[in-house]
Image 1: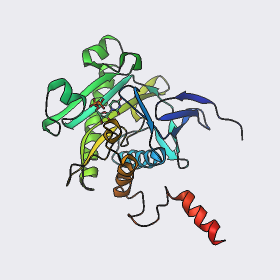
Image 2 (image 1 turned 90 degrees about the horizontal axis):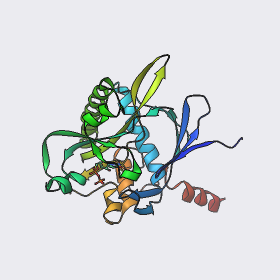
Image 3 (image 1 turned 180 degrees about the horizontal axis):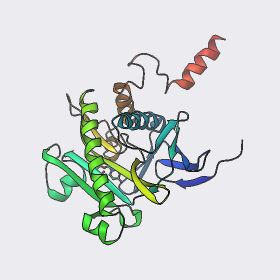
Image 4 (image 1 turned 90 degrees about the vertical axis):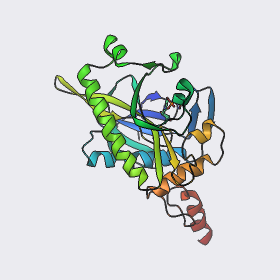
Length: 262
Ligand code: UDP
């Protein structure tokens, strides 16, 4: 097979040219970074889990009519997606105060917000992804007003859907980050949901215990990071129940067992 052309390597994913024009392969790495890449590490099996978790969420969103870049999962770590022109804005949706909001505004972590808050950050690692307003986005032409309306509407729909999805499996959706892209059809473009949705990009707390089941375990050195990601995957029905052999992660050990038997 011909070697694939790498288009981009990010902190947690590598993008390769897809098999057809207008497609891209997203490869999910185990690498983890935090604090604008000042802290680096690896979470064993994270790429496999995020690939599955993101697939599950994107396909569910598709069924409620949110347009996304997801086409299909190819294997344990890769998915085929539509190539988009990424809007250089990170869209953060918050239901509960945590992370940068608690620091910036002095609000206690865990405070339920009286209404959902949407924030925008300009995607620029050198600048540390500064928070911006819709005024900046319009002023510098990062997205049109019409595109921002679509983005805000989709962000709210995604939030409503995901709050329900996670509440149903005993998880509180505290906040999350979305990225959007433009696709062109003839002379017209439209906005679709891109990137990934996973415990790397969401804050997910167990409702009963408040235990963090997301990347904050890595950011705050809480330990049992891979286990937390596995727990999210398991509750989403992507892994076998605890105690039974996991089809995804125990791939190698299952193979070894088979070989031992033979
Ligand atoms: N987030 C993300 N990528 C970023 C920044 C934030 O996925 O580059 C997610 C983060 O995981 C959290 C939400 O967006 O779920 C809000 O993050 P916050 O602004 O609190 O920043 P942080 O505390 O993560 O630096």
